[in-house]
Image (tube, rainbow, N blue to C red; front, side):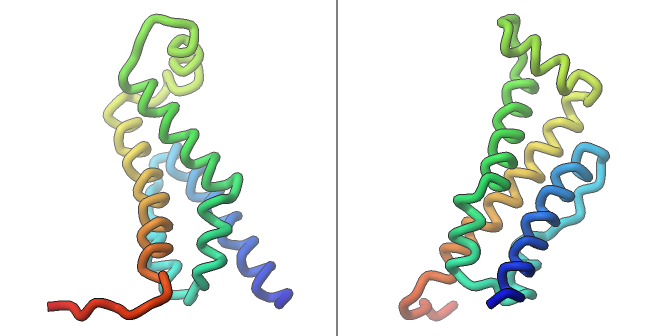
Length: 121
């Protein structure tokens, strides 16, 4: 059991590292493939989706979305201060990449639901 907890910690660390790297222009994590490769259990993915790390990714996506949209209020001024060094096309790529990681987790979570699998045509 201890191995699983340490193993899961490494997934969280990797996600936080992927978040940092995304802002440096490195977007290489194929999260669904990674989860599949390590044979992640559904309850681990459930915990991951509810985690503060996933929340952090979600917040970054929302902030980038607002930064890209732009505006004149105080909130947008703060976002320009935080993300102003990133050109908007790059911010769009980062936002899509981070959202893709969340989508991969949700898709894996959905795919790992118990019950009969539908046959592929």
